[in-house]
Image (cartoon, rainbow, N blue to C red; front, side):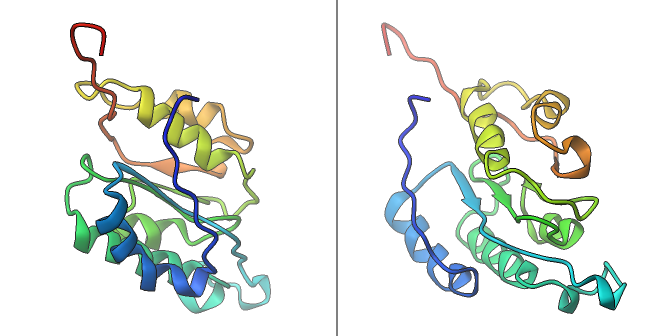
Length: 158
């Protein structure tokens, strides 16, 4: 895709402990926090964070990332995984999250979102409907907020 990517394999319970220092070191404009998650169906209440395997860690990691950068357009965050607590992750400060209908998402879905953000000009909003329609589960799997792109043109030839 022509993007510079720094990838770290950090277990979900450790992500919030490491995200702030990694953000200081790398200074990205797009952050993906993902891995695995699951809603424990036996517990029934989708609005109780204790009913998810890892959603609490995504929420904590987003809060730490927002401690580093408050502005939703200066640091665009995708967070969550299969069946994550979408509303809690968005409320914590993520621009995009999974999974509004507690479905399984494809491992490429966060990358589809990041690519759209990376190649949308900074003076335009990322086309939410287009992004979501290109993911496996659509609006059931990915949702988000109006967010500006991060692509900047330069002249001459930059």
